[in-house]
Length: 445
Image (cartoon, rainbow, N blue to C red):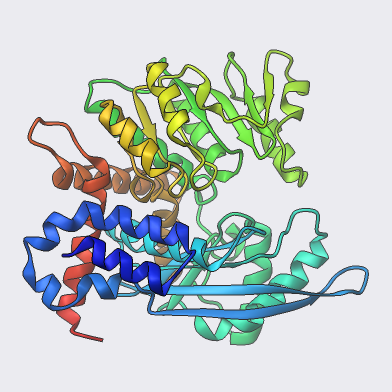
């Protein structure tokens, strides 16, 4: 495999799609050795086929605001690869959404979904619509208009979207309601649904729970656990909420939380009523965390900064892509951090990853660490297909088992000669092999 030629060709075909190109390079660097050892992958053009989506669907979404103005946003669905199952991946509603970000997320989703051991392909979608500051009626009208374009492209055995940034239970409800009206049937075509109409327990906090379960397995390789550890978490959405709750349950102490405005440092720990307050703050449509420091005087707010300067044992970046850079990595290393687990999608820059790995810090990549969300979505699909509803304990136990299996797959494919584990390589190789072999079996299509 000529990595440089592949990347040069991609850069010419997709100029300026930096997030997508970054994600592809990170995967190809990890799997280069296994591809070269298996010439049938090259003969079948697996790399050239897997780095390009099956199709990219782009459409306009006109909707009417409360004051009667007609607004127009762009909608997308990237159906990347369905070799092992129907396309599966979230919908993101955020002003930053563009084709590069959705292609990066869809590409990552292929390998993340493969790691779960469940039969799911990779896809992603969304819109540059911003639900922040919009009324419920405006969000409903936008979601209905979005689904008017999307509904023909999806189905329980074709493409199963879920939520992501800006798409929570409310948005999934509006999207599902319109799909049901158009399709005239109840199906498991969206995950993250309400419990009363096909949703799964644990789904909102599943990504955070899964990230902690994976980090727990990483710590076990060093004979350690979360008990007594201080932890930095970024973001304050569902992932951060789930992670903070589970870390507290396992005896750790989360001391940071962050938003676009900066981060809060609470040396006494974020638990109990403090987590409840963050949920209220998030529900208020204020995308800021500064009020936390006003509510709890023992905490301090650091405007415009990220939490990676705080001295902690474990770091969980749970906000967004490229939020942890080279300088942040240096701070974590100098402060004695032992483990970094990516709760978000590609939150660490390549330079940061290199430094953390070079320093011998346990580093878990997002496609493995945050696979708990889509894994639980897969469990929701199973419950829908069987017309069953599992208990919270059943879902949590299955999630825990899946995350342990993902960790073991990373160890199996990422163990180095000195006994340490390259989790990035392990995750990429394990995820790639399953998909590549399925593509070989199914021929050139």
